[in-house]
Length: 129
Image (cartoon, rainbow, N blue to C red; front, side):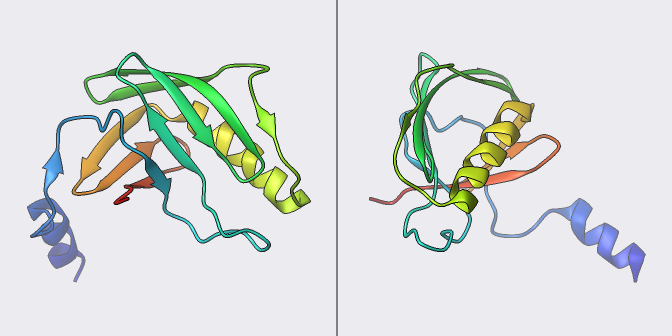
């Protein structure tokens, strides 16, 4: 059974297209259910010059993103966050997401997904609107 599973993983998944271009200037929505009391999910948009906007549950923050090949480095711009009223769970979610983003070291694309890899894997779906 393990051999069959490993063979399947090594063969790749049919129908999934691996993209090599980073999705600059596209809205990316975190693939997660909204937190209680909210209808939104966090989003990320990265410009070609590396300037990025993060729209979290409680705050909107600015970041600088460096992409080189399949590596990525995300730095949150201190003091630039704009906050709005939120629950303690939403504030904790913002802190956890910001920490995970700054620890991401690699990225990959699969169809309309941007996957950021670090100690925690984050999946962002390209917005269709």
